[in-house]
Length: 85
Image (cartoon, rainbow, N blue to C red):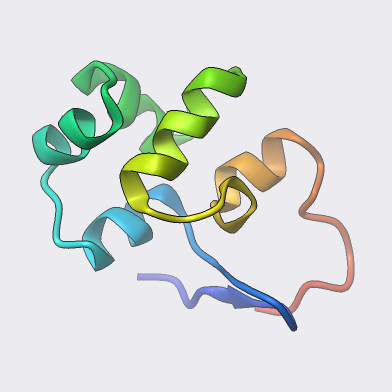
């Protein structure tokens, strides 16, 4: 697993890292988000650009703020310079 990125205010992890940290299977994660299994799997692989409702659902299912999810930060352009690995 890659090392999470830390900023002064938060820890940023991938969807997969958060899911595993929470001890959720893909099915459990999908249920906690209220999303289709295929949607959470695509989010974890980073193969789609989620819309605001999906972003909110993913964050809610992981019990984090959306900006703590690396793929979401990348999708909205928050992964700029100055972040350390």
